[in-house]
Every structure is written in C-alpha cells, then in structure tokens.
Amino acid sequence: MMNFNAIYVLWLREMKRFFRAKSRVIGVMLMPLFFLLGLGVGLGALVHLNSGVSYLQFIVPGIIGMSLMSTAVSSGFSVIWDRQFGFLKEIMVTPNSRTSIVLGRAAGGSTTAMISATVVTVIAILIGFKAVLTATSLLAIVFMILIAMTFISLGLILASIISDIQGFGLITNFFTLPLLFLSNSIFPISTLPSVVQDVAYFNPLTYGVDGIRGSLGSASLFPLTTDLGVMIVVVIIMVSIAAYAFSKSEVGQ
Image (cartoon, rainbow, N blue to C red):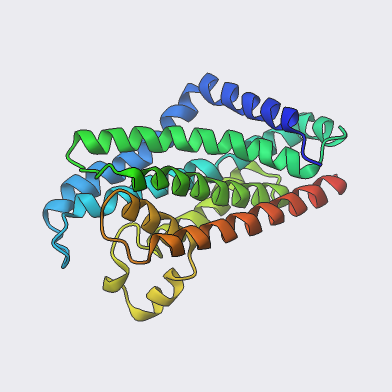
C-alpha cells in the first residue's frame, strides 16, 4: 500500500543531502555544460545537418537528456551510503511498502535531475538555443520526468546489486556512456551505421530525447504520442524491477 508521507520524507531527505553537498551540485552540472559548450558551440560551427537546423538546436535536447540520465543514475550512490551506515536497514523494517520507499527515493532523484536539466536549459537559451513555446512545450517537462524516473530506477537496480562505491561509479559509466552515444542525443540516427540504428531504437533515451526535441519545436523522429507511450511503459517496467530488486537485496542483508 502506498504511503505518501514516507515518500515525502524520503524526498525531503534527498533534497537536503543534495543542497548540503556543494561538490555534488557542482559535479552534476560540469559534464553537461562541458558537452553543451564544447559540442553545441565549438563543434556546432563545423557540423551541418541535412534538415537545415543548427547543430545547437539539435544537440541541446540531447544534453538535457544526458544531464537527466547522469544525475538520476548517480542517485544510487546515496543508497550505498545508507546501506553502509545502517539507515537503509532502519527504513526497510518500517511498515512502509518497498514501492513507497523506491518512489520516495525516485522523487528525490527526479527533483535533483530536473534542477540540473533546468540549469542546462537556461544556459542553452543564453548562448542561442531557441525554444518554441506553445502548449505542447509542457510535454517537455513530462519527458524530462520520465527520463529521470527511468534512470533513477536503473541506479537503484545497480545499487541493490553493488555494495562498493568505486565499483558503482565504474558500472554506471559502463551503462550511461553507451546509452548516450547509442541514441539520437549527439547525432541524428540517420547518420549512424545501420547496426547502431537498430540498437538505438531499443534505447529509451532515444525516445525521451526525441520527445523533448519535438515538444520544444524541433523536428522529432517519432510522433510525440509514440515517444510518450514508449517512455511510460519503460518507466512502469523499470520502477517495478527496481522495487523488486531493492526488496530482494535488503532481504538478503
């Protein structure tokens, strides 16, 4: 049974931890900003897309997706810390359902990821990104939340398996970097080799970024309804797996 008070308490705890750790705030911003300035501005002058859209217009939604993914997956670090210091065992023995605990952590991770994505979006607008603001633009926020929830769930799944912080960092990079480059975040799918294109169609980040791109007025690869439907299904599956893995992991502790 869902316990909204537990979800709120865990969300609030994640918010306090995030803002108190200044190095973490800076860390989650640096890589997206590096990609934004290095690729969007630097490489953008050399890349010309067949659609006639500037590379900056194309890549900003991809950088937003990357920011959401990297920040969301890194939320698994807090699970490992909590396990080592005993806090995780304390909340697991409460009457709250495992789903409520997972959703509370997911809500906190989603909020921190959204903060990071918002900062990236504001800076992108300041350096020349043009977002077409319509009623459909609100869908961009929905897609951002869905991306964050997907990769927070991935982070929780990995954290339920891995107990070593250094190992967790290496494994998350093993997942996130291929997912970034095997999607439409950095380059259009049509420019990728056919084998890579086939892989990209099974990558949830592809649909999340495509949804953000279409919501902000750029040409999208799929209809927004397709992007939205795929992401909702992926989130439901990932949260369910995370709740199951989280529960099994703690039972064995």
